[in-house]
Length: 99
Image 1 (cartoon, rainbow, N blue to C red):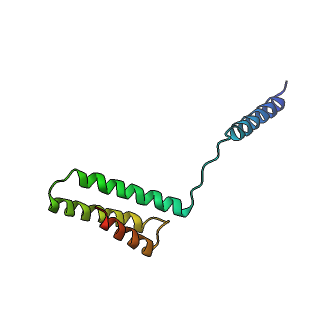
Image 2 (cartoon, rainbow, N blue to C red):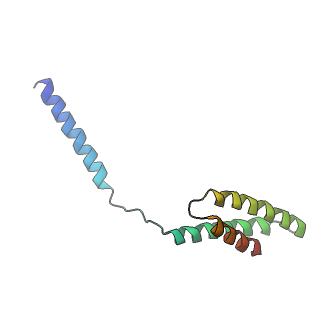
């Protein structure tokens, strides 16, 4: 066999391998809607806030920690594509009322 035939066979084999591995993955990723993603983010923030405040006994320490977390959440939400300024404000008000 000459080199052109070997290169052709190697190219066909590589192409076949690429096609095989591309089509082999039959799982489809679940695409979340905007509302589902917002709810997921809100739930995660509420959970983080509750867990952080459970560890503290002093009321002033809780207020300081809550303020710190709300500032962190505000910064994260300002960079999040799922929330505009009004949505972020509403979410922070809801989190601020969380006990």
